[in-house]
Image 1 (cartoon, protein in one colour):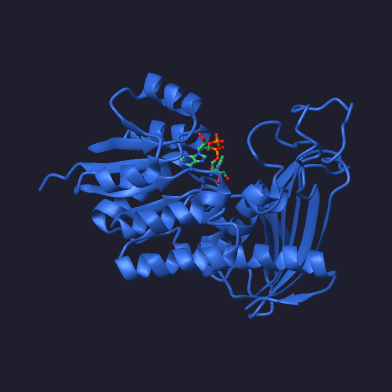
Image 2: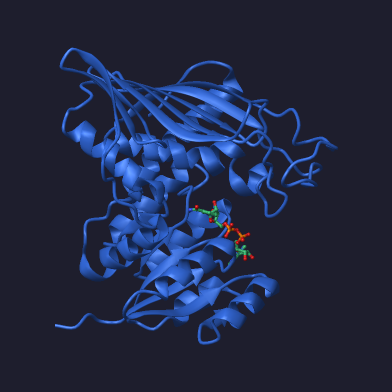
Length: 350
Ligand SMILES: NC(=O)c1ccc[n+]([C@@H]2O[C@H](COP(=O)([O-])OP(=O)(O)OC[C@H]3O[C@@H](n4cnc5c(N)ncnc54)[C@H](O)[C@@H]3O)[C@@H](O)[C@H]2O)c1
């Protein structure tokens, strides 16, 4: 039997929406039927690339007028709108892909999950690094018990000097935070997924602002950010303890005095360890300390995988590999990091 056409609408038509659209357009029987954005510039740009997509300036009107056979909505707005947009789309009877971070807080994420449940619909969080071949390697090795008990995980998303000079990335009220919620979330979710999504129980960390809120003359790739509205952290670091005893340390920065940018996970277990970005595995074998790398890892485009997975979950009922429940756990860890930084002590994670 031939597949039905998968119709999808967008809320938010900026940078990441255009990336999603580009990949959706490569898939068989997928139709982007509508898009809503409040920015004239975003709509104009979208219209140049996708003239057949029906445009709206009010996403609620779009949701009311979507064809009944439109199955899903892709939420690509700034973080502060993710919950509102997702809940409205779920209540309109659509499955939702929502970009990362799932929300600004775990309270919002929980409301989104409640809406999915009452409408019998899926939330797919726009995490893509979990679909990386490097992630699969380590996750598979953990499942095969190659490392024994996982004791310690170090997740790092560190920029030496990379405060975005576009968008609203420096505004806490619209984003929920700075590097920790923007780029830390990527490496945190990847590490957490690799180790089997354990339940976080405590967080202890700090968050510091020392450069973003001041003018800077130092040469960097993205100079001239809006320091006057910048009210997020430059650097946040924390330790998270899980109910299985594993400890994870997360470090994330827009600004840090380090040699170079790092985006990586290091894992240490009783029998073995691994480094994510080089796909190296360290263990003892035959009386030697062995460093191993796979002879063949496989390589695919994570965005292609992410968008096909989204369509397959909604259209074909495929297992959701980036469910809202994982997004909620990640959000709880982020809440814990920020709460601990604010209180200056360890906090419990509910
Ligand atoms: N997965 C990834 O690698 C990745 C990469 C980039 C961004 N993102 C996420 O995607 C989201 C959007 O980021 P972006 O880089 O596309 O930002 P962007 O600023 O380029 O686009 C956001 C769009 O949302 C629109 N918008 C704002 N308010 C709206 C409203 N009320 N109704 C409809 N549209 C509205 C804006 O006008 C803009 O066009 C963020 O949550 C970000 O974290 C994810």
